Length: 196
Image (cartoon, rainbow, N blue to C red; front, top):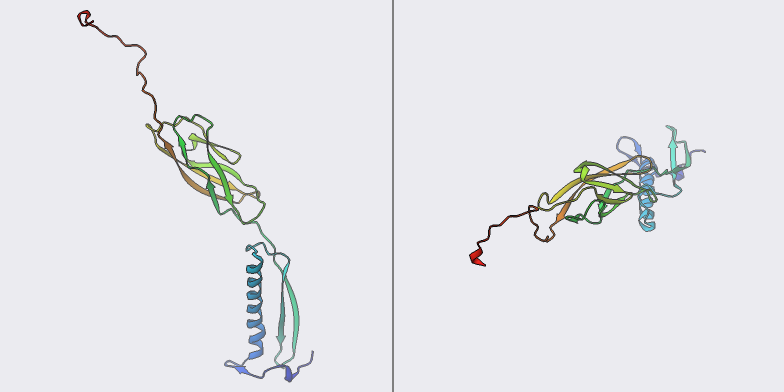
């Protein structure tokens, strides 16, 4: 492509930098990024889930003699798997004396990768007091409010490729009104016969 003076501004910035190069190497790429962000906002694309590719045009290289070459590049955006970012528990309390295998609550995971399935593990806290079945946090002991009124448990959610997120939960034990019970199986009384 031959140099055509009518296609350039002729304006030179400080440092002998032609204005045309600033426009093509700075302004055009910024405009492309702003266009992508505008489309992402309208289409409600999540970051990392961009479809197709992004077209950036108007890239020009110019030699010292003013000759230049322009080319359009297509940059493909590839979605990569990202780690989960949060765990929620639908309920964080359990009645005392609920028994072993009572359901405390249902676990759910926040993950930007739509369709990822989560697997849950107990990794800390009062781990012996709980177990996980699928997406349910269950008791692994009988809780007694008068002995201990809360427990902590740390849960890990793992996506299909092994990326994970961990979070600690406090599980409150709710007091239940219990009937009085005798503290021993047999009692002996002395009764004065004159009082009868």
